[in-house]
Length: 314
Image (cartoon, rainbow, N blue to C red; front, top):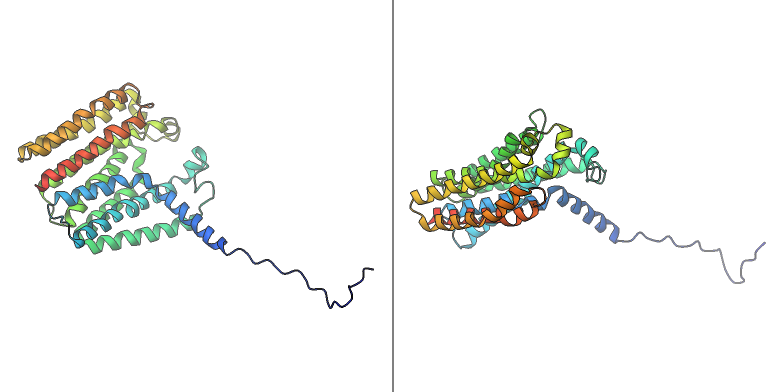
């Protein structure tokens, strides 16, 4: 039997080690990181940019603290909040398909629970509608129409994404047209000229939406999703992308000239001319030129939006 050392009392049990204080903070970081990943930041730019262009086209956007603050909160609403919301809803509706095609994604892999998705959806919906109402009833109207389009795109039984023409149209009008109109009415009543340009750029954005479908032709075919490339093949779909984008911009150029904005029309025309190189490369090989096309043709397209907006404001 072992002896207790002389002079000692009862043996003191080892002290329990307290859990590190950083653990809750780390969990919160993971939670926020997963939330942002679900919201897909890469998709935020287009609606935020369209809101900015609409605000400029209104001719009422000044440099004061109040209008700039109003613009900033509108861009936040259109980009991260509402576009993020649409991405969360889309991933939720695609969870069964993703479990087959991309099981590593956050929802099918179990990294994000459905409870997390529900809470994030509620928070983003509340934030988006609250900001829209703060910016005015007309802004809220366009936001409401955008939310309806997002639900129709993803949710059964409509699930418009199953058809490339309908699904891409809903996304294009939401990301470009409705966001532009919301930006305009946040500062001034919507004009016929601004409405026409917003709709034309929505038409052009339909082509842009098709670019994203080339990378998923195999999966879309297996799942019965009739994207433009699935319906017509790569070559025809690539030509439709280029034709849609070019025709929309040509119409904008013509209207700007008709309305007496030749300088803005000239800038849009030069930007369209610069798109001919990526257009040709994309038509020749759409799958291997998608990244180049996004970085060149689409970027020039959105700069044309800004030029048109400035022309309308002048």
